Image 1 (cartoon, rainbow, N blue to C red):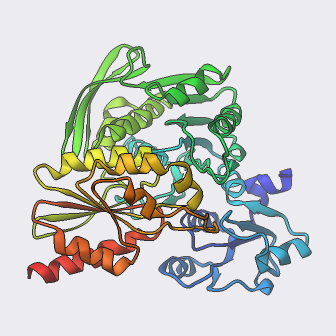
Image 2 (image 1 turned 30 degrees about the vertical axis):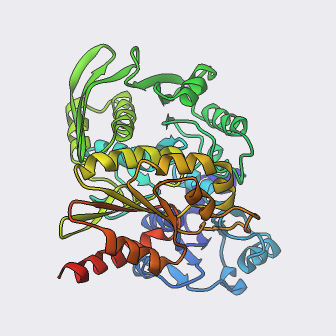
Length: 464
């Protein structure tokens, strides 16, 4: 990007046009831009409550893509989910307008702040949310742009009064190297997004480039329990590196871990000195580590330990991350975004503990044919943790089908799986078979979350 584009000061008095403004990430950036007094317009494929909210904040929004809507804009920002053949992008190129990716736009919005990017194959939404809440508890009021909605505020983006800016750094298309943050957390490094990264080595190289983009006088916080993150830190010459985890020798060591049905307690030792107990209201060992990363970064930034720990204790989660949607006649309905075998494994392990004596019933929707093909066996193994699994057909996202790749093949490898591609029939099976004390999870990164309210309503009708 030229200096004209990548400095926030150069956006003042200009008009930004967002193509795909209704998406979670794009809408958050639009809200932050509006809070700076920047003129915002944008379009999406359909109307939504997100568009209505942006319009109420002063944005000019359109529920369709029309070339002429770009006219008069100074900069055009697009989501990578948008096709290069989109009529508005074509128009922007014809007009020779500066065109930015979402990552480039976020980097610009962070350019006047001390930015903290949270990266990793798994856990980045929760970790960035935890860091935000911890910093808020310390009175630092950071700006933030996160891939999920904070339960406490109901928002995924905010312009704070402090000089810190917490951003979730999405590695899925390699664009996180655009951020050039002051500091970063890397939760883990593992092969995913096989539509973009053909091999695990490609992922490793991308994270290496990301680490090199951190300010030389900044901070890299990494999980010592993860081989990929540790390798990244070992192979990175700068900046300052801080480790966290249950691994002996970690700069922030977490021990005496007590996992509870819906939370945990653990002792935290910072550079050899016990600083307190970390109490969480979100389940699973993975969330203990996520909180450890957030705490290590907060402490490295100079936040007081007691206030940061208090903030973590108040954290209630983010949308679509083990989110309790309803409790009906003793049956709990959870929605979760997990879509990689590692995420499914840790989520269902936590869910089994949460279920107690009840059963765990899962409706899983694989996300992308390429991921399903690459991890077919791993999906079957991770899903086998549940008592019963209903598999929906693969959610294509932007991909064309791959011959022979179907959820039915996963079900065939499982003793507890059944392939029911019809949404209504899948919901009905779970509604009819659930018993008081059971936990039902709608699981996946597609539109499987739309079933949670249908299941809740169905259970209410069944038991009332």
